[in-house]
Length: 255
Image 1: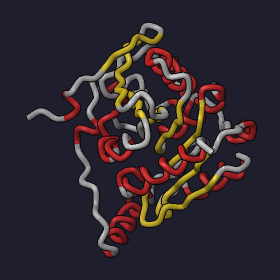
Image 2: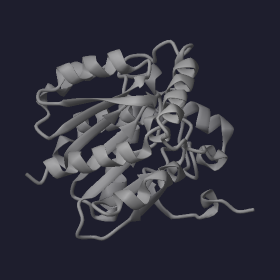
Image 3: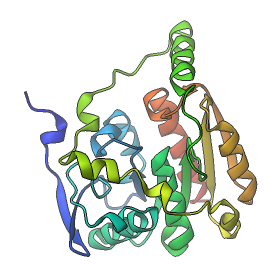
């Protein structure tokens, strides 16, 4: 049986590495670039893609080493490289700027993009973000179950997670893709220069909540939103809310 993972999109060569991407939507809409959370490929955004396409032209891509993207040497697995890869894909697609949003590990790449390529950024969305070494994860599972119980009690739909969201071509490369935090420093104190609208959003049942609050304090005029009934990986708990927050964020850049 085939899955959306088998639907190969476009490829672009960035410094000798073939990166897999998809650009969907009407060219006259503002661009929104999405950065996947750890261990996921671009298909995971299918949960909200139709919603996003009502107000944005959506760029998704597989970080090098994940999904269908190729990879380079071990030194290339850094958030700096991932951010520069995104710029290369934008150049290939003819996108002058974009709203950039990342979830969890992907938010680290989004933050690095904002630091390195502020001139290509229209708005920034940091979901479930930490910019320090990952917090102790021992309670994330328990908190996630708590969020699911709250959703069920409130009569809210529960997302059925798909295995193919986590498919990849090479196990070793996929593992290396998630070592970037070992190589780069916390840049939250350098984000005070941002002039664009910034959203920092995190679930109430997410161990990164304190860290998200700390990061928001370093960014002038950043809006902090705490998502109720939401664990780590907010896209998989409250997808409609994530889409609504992205819509609101992009509308701010039009004011």
